[in-house]
Image 1 (cartoon, rainbow, N blue to C red):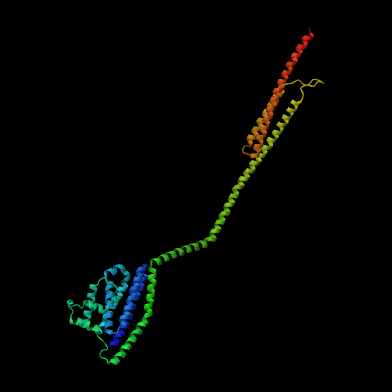
Image 2 (image 1 turned 180 degrees about the horizontal axis):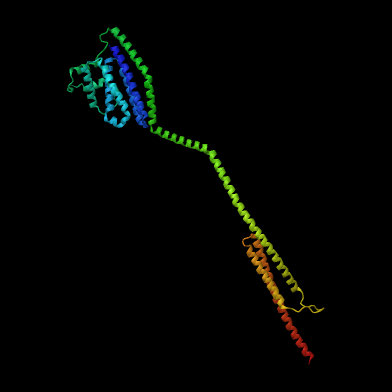
Length: 403
């Protein structure tokens, strides 16, 4: 009878753990909050550890009662208003799992306890929860803790309740021979140890997962993950840029070539216009040079004429001096200078060297005209002085001859 109850206890513990693991995994997948995921992992780890520990205890009856206490208190905590407000609808599947497990746990206890003791057990659990509404770590609460908190004389417990509490010190092997009892206890201990050892890897996996979630919930880890996400984003952006780099390079190269060709076309137009201007300037320079040569030739003839003596001592008398000829020559020189200025003004914005040459030629011509003018003034003055001297001489000679 007790061995069968122990097997049922162990089977229920496995069912209990399997029923709460799936909803908790679903809850963890539904949230990105590392603290909530860690709290859920703490819950499932403590619940699994308590279920396996209760199922591998020395007394099958007490084990069944401890499983009822674990299931009932877990359902009460999940139905609490604060838990519902914190976890919301995401924990609805877990609440349904506890609601299904509680009748199974009570059925397990009914195979070893009468109905009045089952009712007393439920009342004791409810009383304990009412006395400790803020306790949520109920995985480590056993029937002994519940019984000690509600076993005061003022609690008004019935005889059935007292009989239930008296099971705490019950030895299931007390009726056996001492040698047989020792062998039976040794065998039961080995079976319980093997049962718990077989579930230890599952508990170890939960513990490792809890450690991982605890590390993930640390502020340093969140900062490290944020930095890693930033680095990953930068690497992704760099990868996209490198992927687009050939197209960007081709586009930039095409734009550079197009800009260079446009610049060449603009410079070609400018050079063509400059060539036309230079050609016009050269033609104007040619005309200026021809006019300048004609002017210089006329000036040379004038200078040659001025340098010849007015009269020779021998030979026939030369042509008498005529002031109108010099006046006409000066007018001709002035006209040539005016034409030269017009030609230079027509050249406009031509070659700087040509403008400089024209300015130099104009200055030279101006100096020549000024020189010729002053030479004419000197010559006229000389002629007047000579004429006056000749007249005075003639008058003096005539006086002497006619006396």
